[in-house]
Length: 172
Image (cartoon, rainbow, N blue to C red; front, side, top):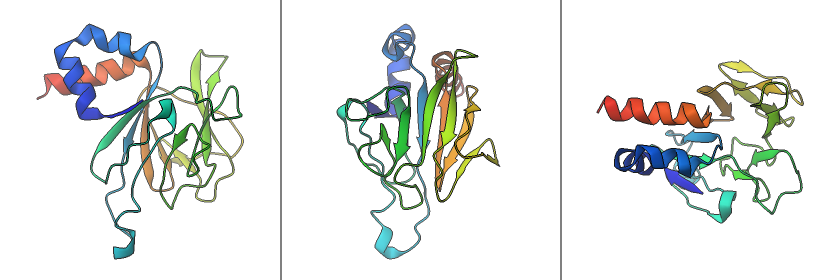
């Protein structure tokens, strides 16, 4: 299910313990939407939608979205959570700079964590400011910054996401 970060913050302020329950041990991706427009014709081009959990909201730049990392029934890959422009991906990033099948997340069996893998995309995948090698798993830490084309994401472990929410609430 995809929701705004503001909604997650509101839920956390109402019931901090309930946030852990909602996460159910699943990692989280926070999307930073592109702000700039390449041309007037692309006013509606900087939109997101997701196939995760069957929802398909679209938001314009400047808002942040939160989605849990979970498989959809539509995807053929059993252990990979795919990202790209087409609707058969687990996470659909409808932006011209994102390839049809851009990258995927996969469990990292050696660390009980997660890894990101570039699928050989045209514009590449950037992890913590460095372009990653295609088809090679790169370990993620909570708070890792990922960029697919012009789309920015932040990966959080469940505990890391709760810490981030708590910090934002305390600094209000």
